[in-house]
Image (tube, rainbow over the protein chains, first blue to last red):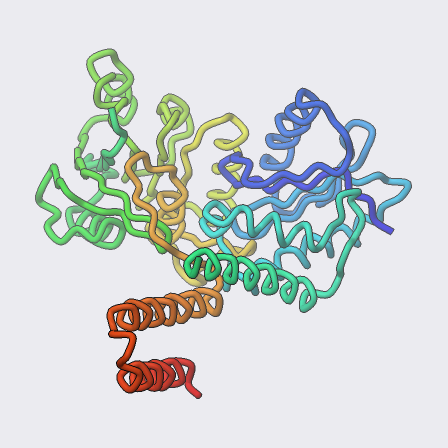
Length: 156
Length: 234
């Protein structure tokens, strides 16, 4: 069972592109985590371990192109390798939806990036759906509803 | 002041500078500039699939050291120029971390295009890691990136990466395009839009018909139904 604490998506130029918090934290605590983790992770060499200790928890990250996907996990509850797989599944889902996803896609469709993440991980940080096919079906259904709303608006 | 100017600074030092051919190639590939002899090019547009951003291109050269140029650039007399810049592209010799540290990168993109070909991907990655951890937005890319178009992380290298950096810059004057990432959804919206237009036209024509003219109304309904069937591929 996985219970993520947070997921951050940070560019190589230290810009936060997406963040989702699964534990209650104050804005100050969130800022501290971001400010601490960004230089810590961006400065790591490519051959270094993708898992590191930070504060009272563990951080698992993986780099895809110019983006770092960073997850905070609880060592007693989470499996770090499973967390890497969750990150990979998220990237795969976005890749299929956007068609070779890039940073620009996430910047201009951040709500869709959040939607895909919300289909994958529940608000308590546990996995909601592991099937990429199901995730994309749900996102397509959302797109269809959105399209129908648009049609209803036009017709009315 | 709108930040819509891009400054390209080319190192023309005789010992380690960039040749005219390299400069022409770079400006052509990165900014689609056909005439590299101009120093100011107005009315350019940076295009991505999501937006268009108008910008002016300023091409400058320096023959002395980069530190000297940066000293001038960081001075009070260049404040107005700095405030108008969307980005700076330094084209030239060997990577100089100390010079790079003095380049102001707030609210602008900054690129160092290394034309020497002396840096390998690992060195470039380490230089960029050092820059990002020190809070600089400057990114080092290599003009002559050979072999694979991506590095071990699947990231574009060379000028393709430079393009990505410029793409992700929040241009102040950008005009968004109506783009949907899901092509099927986009196509579907276009189809629906065409059908709605057709239905609206038919409704307006029906409203203009005389109440007694049932034959014409029936013909209109049939023609509309046929057109809808055709559009839906039925």
